[in-house]
Image (tube, rainbow, N blue to C red; front, side, top):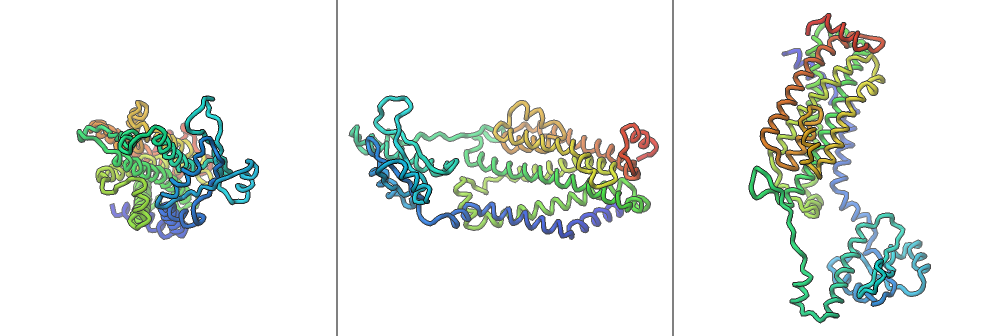
Amino acid sequence: MSKLWTVIRFTYGNRIKQKSFLITTLIFLLILSVMIHLPSLIAAFSSDGPQKVGVFPSQPDVTPALIKHIASSPDPTIEIVPLNGDEQTAKSMVDSGQLKGYLLSVEAESGSEAAFPAFQYKSKDSMPSGLLRELDTALRTVKQEMAKEEIGLTPEQADTLFAPIELVPVQLTDAKAEGKTESEIELAFVLVYALLFLLYVGVIGYGNLVATEITAEKSSRVMEVLVSSVSPLTQMFGKIIGICLLGLTQIVLFIAVGTVNIANAAGNEMLKELNLNLSQIDPMLLIYFLVFFLLGYLIYATVFAAVGSLVSRTEEVGPVIMPVTMLIIAAFMIAMYGLSNPNAPFVVAMSFIPFFSPLLMFLRIGMSSPAPWEIALSLAILISSVLALGWLAAKIYRTGVLLYGKRPSFRELRKAMRAYDV
């Protein structure tokens, strides 16, 4: 046990002191901080004042009503500029930066006359979705105001007619009859997405690190010295656990920095815009994340360790671990689909397969309500698979670390494994 702890401490201490690890961690922490503050940074560096949008006369002319409506906004982001003349002049103003774009009335697609004109918005932007939403909202309001005046509705009648319909989605769960509210669903989506990404990056990144670490020691012939003092089994699990602790350290740093950034004014404003309430986070979801992260890491790390012991040069690691890497990539892609369809039969079935369950069962726990027996069965299969693969990986590792030169075939490897007792 003392030798195992020595290997763990050496692996963890050696890696955490490396400049590459420290610089990479710092870069990711900076990127995380910038992403959280991105909305406020964009607002700070955006052009001063509202964006100018030109409007040509229409029939009926909505320009005066549009100007009045936007001017009544407490913090208008659009300024309407009345246009006269030909469209070529408007294009020149867009090219010179005087206008962001312009509205041009066109014939309705149905071809029939309408009380309110149809518009085209022309600009140099490929997908001006934000500005289009604001213009659409403004035009809808103007249309309603014009309709009220034309029909002669009283303010009370107009409010009743144009009042928005309230439709609140609620997700039914077995845990509580009232189900999840819209804000809880949105919070779960954001949290599950972030944790899925951490699972994916952590498992694939640190699993690769296990294989690279083993191959590097083997190529430098340090492995021959280590085998004489520490058993291969102790070496393998010492490296796996040491790198796992390294990954957990990095993830804790990410969560801590993310929490600090979100706690400030800009982060709170972002949460309000996204309609997220951190007090609604289910603590069990975080516990499940830790459990599935550890089990997912172990099942892939044991395979990476076994595969890494079979090659003699670090440049050979990539092609050899590619099939295993494709498994975790496939699991991540299925999880992305499952975010919007967590109860799809394919997602449910794959959540019981060991190489996929760390991501998919965690996804189902966060986005739906799998039965307790389903969670227990998935965990039981996953733990059993970790133990079985650990036993097999230990046999391959003990044999592979002392095999140099050409990568052994399956027949040669099986023959060599029979000569050793793990």
